[in-house]
Image (spheres, rainbow, N blue to C red):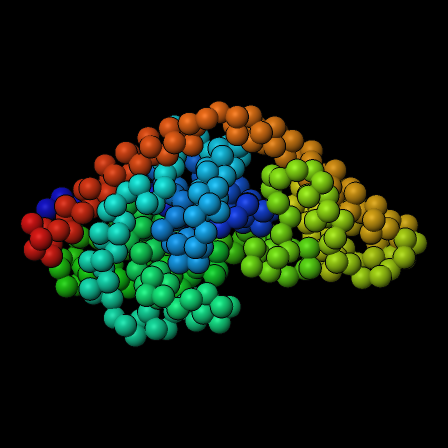
Length: 329
Ligand code: TRP
């Protein structure tokens, strides 16, 4: 049986659940882009099967799937350098998920906090929602991914993927699946939302990455601040407007702006307008490209079909090892 590849292979998945926002960009897209084309291989997919656990609106899902690919391409994802595809185009994900589910202890999944949190938030407690981490483990293990960069909220899911790989290998042969390393993005900027909490779609505090200028402006002008007047000195470290603005600035520029906050004379309205200006300048090229790409019919289909073919070539090899290991071949 051929040993799985051990070279650097970075894998990242994102659920298509609405428009991308600044938190997605600085927390995941930007670091992923920086990785693209460097040593090793980058595999990137849209977890549309996972999305079914919470989205039951076919039109919305269809739109989100398209949008997310266009968003990524506009941000600079290069299908020549990275593999980009839809999870549901590669049936091996569900196949491996099933096989892994037969070694996954109930207790391990029962301890998963994200399931409990989602149910508490009102998402229906389906079997699919419960076994979400098994499908995610399959996503990762199918590609012999060595490194999986995720935010802290996904750390437990990654541990489950590692546990399942180890369990599977113990039962069926130690070299069948590669045990992935989590790369927890601690260094990544914390991106606060308009209310100062972590920016997240589920908190309704996002600033969109694309979308029309009016919507972006409305979100930025709506950032919650304290009620200090224009003349009063302000604390940049506790100000959400400043924390967001900093993401667009060099260290020297951030220092200058912080001094302006502390000196007084800069009102929040003005500060927000400056932030909007920085945002529009920073994303001007991507926003123009996004509008352009949206006018090419068939582009998403073309990119993701090519991506799925490349992904399947890798996935098929893993499945052959797995099938042989368990006795299905
Ligand atoms: N659960 C991840 C999230 O909500 C998305 C995801 C699905 C994923 N499969 C993955 C992330 C595999 C990394 C690797 O963010």
